[in-house]
Length: 297
Figure 1 (cartoon, rainbow, N blue to C red):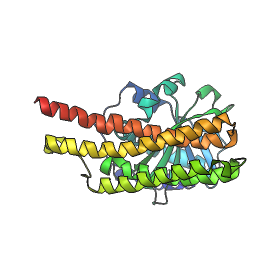
Figure 2: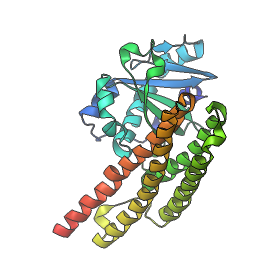
Figure 3: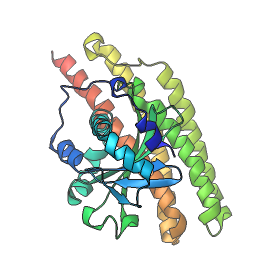
Figure 4: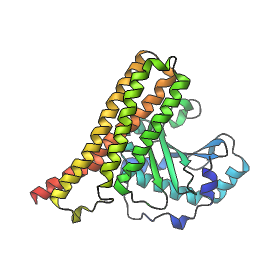
């Protein structure tokens, strides 16, 4: 975990300027109640919206980082929120829980061995008043992947998200060996889910290669919009099929009180449902609106 070190070296001029972008009320309020979790060595430090360290007691490296890099943290926080607004539906589909928690959101960062450029971010929400006393009760709302030096995402960032689903399945399998009472009891579920994960990955990557990296609707014909929309819808169908299988497994685990393991499957299911919502709102929903306008023009 080297997030504090990498952000300490960050040159603000390398972060793209996003002036002129607008936040709705949900994103505005969440920005004001934004908590960080950053790693330094083997320790995760929890930062308040004003960058005081809530826990654990900060060391000198962290204290110096706060003193010198508040501007970096402000810019980074805004950049994350712009990414959530443009390329995610995490806040939109989880707005009830976020609003119930006074618009509090917690971003746990993981730098991805990229020299401080690429980050995976897991997002949680929690009552600010009970964050310390009941930290484990935080609600997982999803994950995102950002490139600090390039805001625009090719193919809506789907390659990264689909790779993550494949990688997360391997992690879930590792947890199954550790946490399940009798892992072999669920062999058929693991096999079916693995086959669906591989099919999603292979078919999606093949489809994505045939699609434009970036969409400029003004330069695309109505017929091309229809065809591209259908291709993205096909990818979504693979995600829906996988989600149905994982949901069935999740329900069975809860019925059998596999409490030590089921939370990993539930989190995986959350990532899948978020991706389905992303397709419906940000991709297929947007294409459908453009196609309808095209037909009526």
